[in-house]
Image (cartoon, rainbow, N blue to C red; front, side):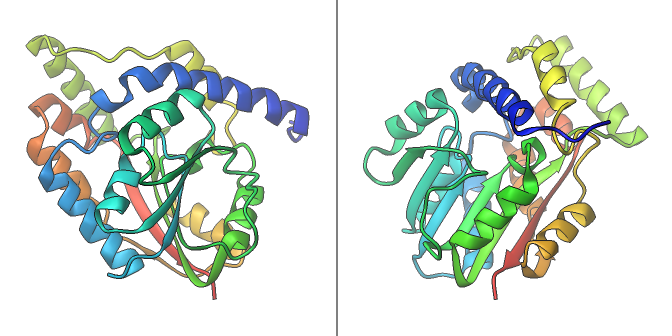
Length: 257
């Protein structure tokens, strides 16, 4: 199969933008997207302190969506710039945070910031959707200051083990049996764009670590994201708690020397 051209990537990006713009309206209704409880917020705060240290720093929240990770960063007094490709997501983030954060419309693969602009970068559920991750990682490395850190929160949303598939089916069955609301997505569009992502075969920690290493990052280690997932499960309805365990979720912390 021939490599994607810049025009191919541009077209796909516009489809990605349109898809997530539509989803912005109901995005915060889903567990795993919005921070739903004090317990979950506290787990995020621990993760952020462990990753970035206790002092307020300059942080770029990449693909900020409706601004939930921005909310956790602001709760620790970090100076936050938040970026997203979707105007609809940005509108919701600005409505939440006003002038507490610098919230910008932009492309996480083609940043407009100067070199060495930030002490830390964070992104959640973005990497698996990237059209050109090598370009993105090079940009992220560029805008970090020496000693700065990158925290990637993501998962393998394509592949499930046999056990995970059973868990997912049981969670969906229980949700339907309980008559819980289903936050509809355009499954055909989702399938179409996800089949053209760079990581269309799934994103693994090992593959991500290798690519971050190639981009120049060092000291790449797993971060304790499971504490966040457990906090989500403790406050979620049973069917959502079950479904949160049906995919491989992880976080990696990397450093610019």
